[in-house]
Image 1 (spheres, rainbow, N blue to C red):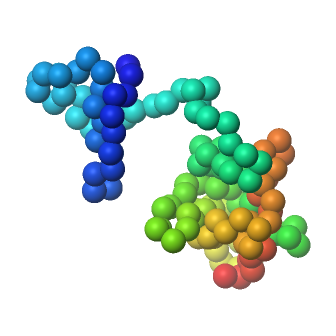
Image 2 (tube, rainbow, N blue to C red; image 1 turned 90 degrees about the horizontal axis):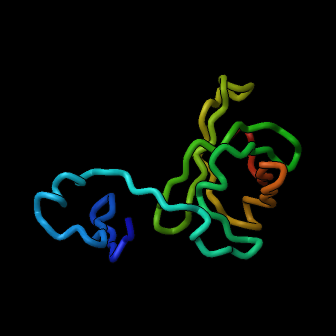
Image 3 (cartoon, one colour; image 1 turned 120 degrees about the vertical axis):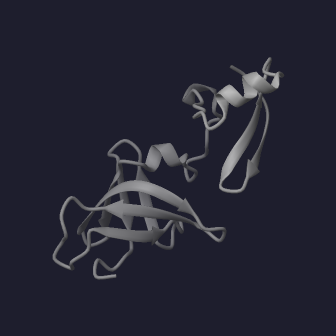
Length: 125
């Protein structure tokens, strides 16, 4: 289906789908998930990333400490935040960390090929 128009609404999105005009048809699709074929998305520059690219990447500190994997991202208004989860509590007692996605300040490098994000972040924080 083709998305004719869309807008943010509360914590979600409202979309107008091409050819769906009757109230009953719309109600049948309420709360449906919408997927977009990644091949139709525009290419990004080297320092831009789609969230879907970052989810699942390994996160390590500049000193080589493994913090875990990106499980999700949060939009805070000022900057996006990586939700990084470890399989088990680490030596610092952490199982989940919220790391601001501040490129070149906190996020030093994102290696798409290696599926690895290097951060300047204190593992004890």
